[in-house]
Length: 89
Image 1 (tube, helix red, strand yellow):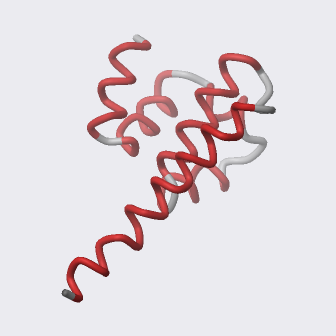
Image 2 (cartoon, one colour):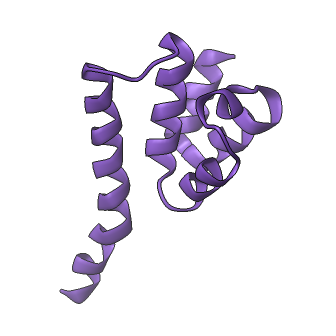
């Protein structure tokens, strides 16, 4: 299941979050409420997915793992705001 989830996440992180929510309880263990995963689904899917996957492997996110979350955040921000510059040219 893990390799299939990684392949799906590469194609669509939002689909991977939906599959995680439907078939596992990883999102509910990583987050205390439903609001943050929902907000992450809408705005920051790579960050939400990365945080959830790192949380399920070690039950904590600390040290170098935060660098991966920050990299996913930069990827999300780039995908949100990077397209506007290309259209302005």
